[in-house]
Length: 171
Image 1 (tube, rainbow, N blue to C red):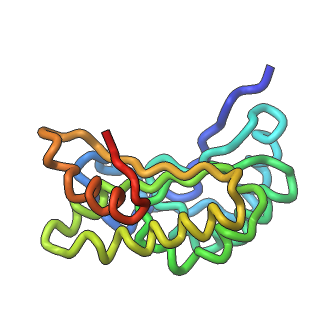
Image 2: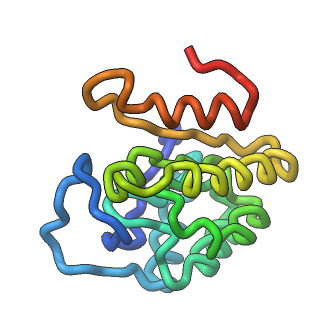
């Protein structure tokens, strides 16, 4: 019997600090590609997918392309959780690697770190990317994650932008 997923923290370094994430009380570390290849080759036979997320921002890994190539080579599916702020830098990789199975965007991270900035400037490029990804690879799951911290109005602006962009209604 295989595990559904195994989490691999390729870095504990994040480009922002969200209130809903615990403070990392460890030295900043980035997993080398060689170490990742070793770990993912051990994980691949044991799980259906690997999740490149725990405390760090996976898209910030300086060898992210090599990490995805290693996943392609061992034939393991990948789930990524990201705040999306570095999406433009990694967009072509995420569109082209067949190992990508799911991308989770933590939308609350933007409002949490940049409460006075325009949300649409952050969210529209993410939605443009998801539309392009869906057209190129409709089998890839895309999740927009939000925390329910308080009242419904905490997420109202996100809901409105998503509803308008996708011409749908969120209930």
